Length: 247
Length: 225
Ligand code: B12
Image 1: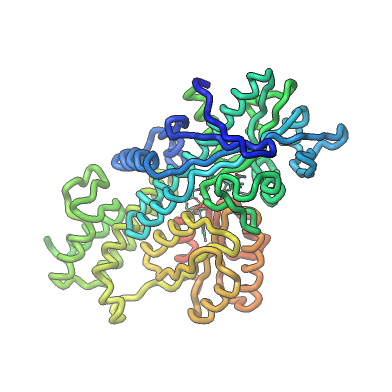
Image 2: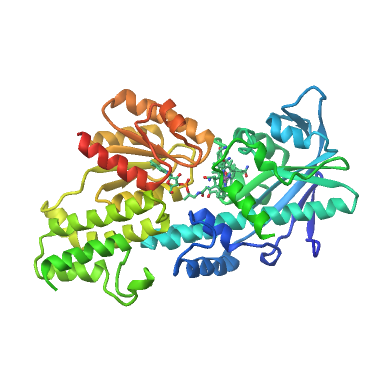
């Protein structure tokens, strides 16, 4: 981590984190993958369109991110869930296994706002189908890049206290039911990062991510966490693979 | 250009996704006329619109099979759909007059509680490009909305889209209700959390992970009927 990001304390162990575009890394090859192309196979002029969309995204996205540090309690015999800030989360085996040794948990959410998505819709309406599709994919990968940065930030902050962090996990992944978004959001201030949750557990703006990260002296970061998940055709599995290859 | 040559060229432009002379795609056809200019010219010399449409259909089939073989991807499908839309714009008067007809009606919407619509929109455009009339009901569609629209459009085929497992549960309820009221109506489902297994379980007739599969399903319904 080169530099520390600015934080704003909002009370209740909760922090807003200022992420600027220059703090995130958006990789073209990840966008290509999401569009459906094998890495480095996107034909012209779509590659230029991707670059244009990235440039536009720099101008119009509004990144908002933050997290809360919550207490965690685990029962030795319970392998499928944890109690975070006095709320029980039915995390299932994979996530519980990784987070069990945490001393505390960072509960986070972030969004890039809805401007890029609105732009995508506008292009689709105008009949610019590929451009609309590309803008949407750029928005998705940008949100994911913000999550990487927030993760790095929390990691760097904890390192100063000699604590380590785990991988991050989101409701809806690794068999953790997405309906538990409701419990996760109940831990954060209302409208935190300007994100609202519908009854059906969908975040608005759409390009938003929520999740948890374990913190503690005895926790581990798993390089190959995808191997434990049963979703084989997940885009993130491919993206993670690509990241390992290019890093 | 001869009539036949012109028609064939339109079909080729659909297959390659060449929309008009200004379009930078595909690279090897830079500066050449696309479906827009060619269709206008074809109609000027009174090419039969049904022949033009037939050639376009063949063109869409070419790109569709390339997609099926993994030689083309969603963006190429979209370029072909766009090229096809340019043809359709010129043929509008003939559709209105009844000289040519769409293949049928496809009623498409994102289910209740869900606001994600990029996937649905892509399906809509590719299906339309393949000669279907698409009635897009938008996002967060309550079951009743589908029911009302099916009543208004007898014989239509219904497509449902969802992003999360939570809204996939709403999708299952919508499929059930449609099937209860209109057992004859065909329903195809899609979206990130779906699978063939989930589609069968909710009683849908079809499932596809991509727009091309939706087109193939719809075209097969034509053969079956
Ligand atoms: C990119 C992505 C994101 C992006 C953007 C999401 C978005 N909605 O725009 C970001 C990073 C923001 C994100 C966030 C989240 N995501 Co996400 N995400 C994805 C990913 C990798 C791709 C989705 C996508 O945009 N694809 C591109 C579009 C064009 O495709 P599509 O909409 O699926 O449509 C295509 C097909 O499905 C099909 N289709 C669509 N509709 C129809 C209809 C018919 C009739 C037919 C035939 C076909 C069809 O054709 C379309 C074109 O090819 C998927 C995994 C995957 N590989 O699909 C997970 C996925 C959708 N996400 C998932 C989850 C859980 C989440 C979060 C809840 C995680 C979290 N807690 O933060 C949030 C939810 C966001 C919210 N607003 O609530 C789960 C959802 C399943 C579930 N458990 O409920 C998925 C499936 C991953 C997984 N676990 O397997 N996500």
